[in-house]
Amino acid sequence: MEEACEIARLPEELLSAALARTTPRDACRAAAVSPAFRAAADSDDVWAGFLPPGGLPPLADGEPPAPALPSSKKELFLRLSAGPALLQDKLVSVWLDRETGAKCYMLSARNLFIVWGNTPEYWTWIPLEDSRFSEGAELVNVCWFEIHGKIHGKMLSQGTTYAAYMVFKMDENSYGLNFPVQEASVSSGATNLTRKGR
Image (cartoon, rainbow, N blue to C red; front, side):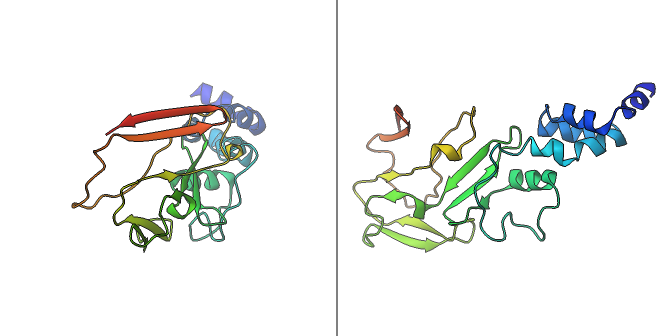
C-alpha cells in the first residue's frame, strides 16, 4: 500500500509520459491501479501517442458511428478500434488495430477494378444491409475472374506488417473457385508477392 502512495506523489505529467511509451492495453490496465494512474492513463497526452502519426484520413460525415462525437482522444481510439469508420468517399473504411494503433483498411467492391464488373451478364450490383458499404458486386457467371485493388502506401502506418484479404460470401450453389488454381498477388513498389492455391 505504501508503494501506491509513493506513486500517487508523482506528477501526472510524468505518469502520462511513462504510459505514453506503453501500449493501449497497458494504459487501460494502469487505469485500474490507482486514481493517480487513472487520471494519467485517461489523458489526451497518452492517447494522442496511440493514434496514428500524421492523423487519420478525412472521415465521412457522422463517422465514427456513435450517438455523439468522441470527447477525448481515448474515446476516439476506442471507437476506431472497435469497428470501421467510412472515409469521405464512402468507398473505403478505416479502423485502428487495438494492440498497436496501426491503421487498417477495407476497400468496397466499387473501389476495386473487377474485370467485366459493369457487364450485367457477368456481375450485378446489389445493396448490402450487413456492411458499412452500401453495395457489393455479385458474380453471375464469368469465365475470367480478375479483381484488382489499390491503396496508396502513404495511407498505411509505417513500420507495420500488413496482410491483404479478399472478403466475400458464397452461395450454396457456388462453384468454380477450386479449379483452376487461384492466384493472388500483392505489390508494393518493386516488391511483388504471388501465392497460388485452391
